[in-house]
Amino acid sequence: MQKKLYFASDFHFGIPDRIKSRKREDIFVRWLEEVKNDASEIYLMGDLFDFWFEYKTAIPKGYVRLLGKLAELSDSGIKIHLFRGNHDMWAFDYLTEELNIELHREPLILQTGSKLLYLAHGDGLGPGDHGYKIIKKIFQNKLNQWFFRWIHPDLGIKLALFWSRKSRYASEIKEAEDDGYNLKKIRERLIVHSLEILKKNPQVNWFVYGHYHLPFNEALNDNSRIVVLGDWITHFSYAVFDGEKMEIKKVTSNG
Image 1 (spheres, rainbow, N blue to C red):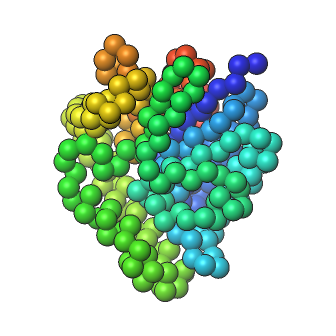
Image 2: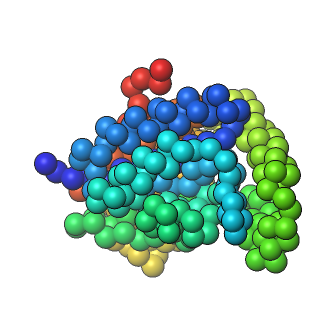
């Protein structure tokens, strides 16, 4: 059987509430059970959780079924990769130590067979979005992370989820108001960034991004394509790569 690479992104488990998040988590766990039959590697391209912070002796409550399934697949020999997104950038070493997940903090260039893939969560890439880029630097500052660790988890996680939900819902409103405008803006940012990467790595065949919740698969030039993975909030989309071509697919049943 031809082994495949699977890519999925932007699950945001934890929002909008425990019941709805658990339903999406169950869908994802069933999907993992399905793809394990022909997956050699699974790339989770960021924002697995809507908020994640690892205290020295505590992690956010919940996600037992999800973490258990990832552990099962990892133990079976399927390599699991996790890119830190803008919502789970405070993942440190817990998932690596407990689940043997390979954590990526920067974009990755992956050689697979004769193809070259560029993989990144996608946040802060390309022109514009200056406000977010400033906030990202603040959140990534080690001193700020140290200060946050001293807030009791009950309060710290509650505050972070409140802020995260507010940010996510504001984005959903913008996306709903004009998908065409947002898609145009996404294309412009990612095209500029991808072309910059091609100057240094002209052999890249596929640019795979998360972060932006509108899935598409489009040609960049005769040799390269851009894939945006979508999300597991409204689209339940993912990409599968068979060694030659990459396709975006959607989970057929969300019930």
